Image (tube, rainbow, N blue to C red; front, side):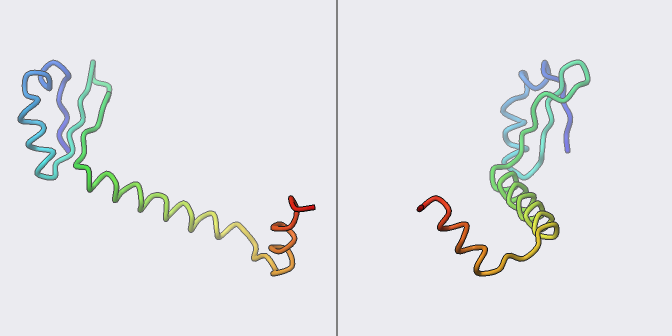
Length: 80
């Protein structure tokens, strides 16, 4: 992962885009604080999907199984 100051990033934007296009992640900083992260589109989407799947698995661990009767009752709740 490459870190670069905002002023340098402005001057080297084309180079940074090429780096990102070739799979590198670039973090642009201002006064030493990260401001933006540039990642290749496919990698960014893949990491989002993996994070959501992990969160769903964690959520399922804390939920007890519902019976068929409970599911049908929830479905019919708003129909009365």
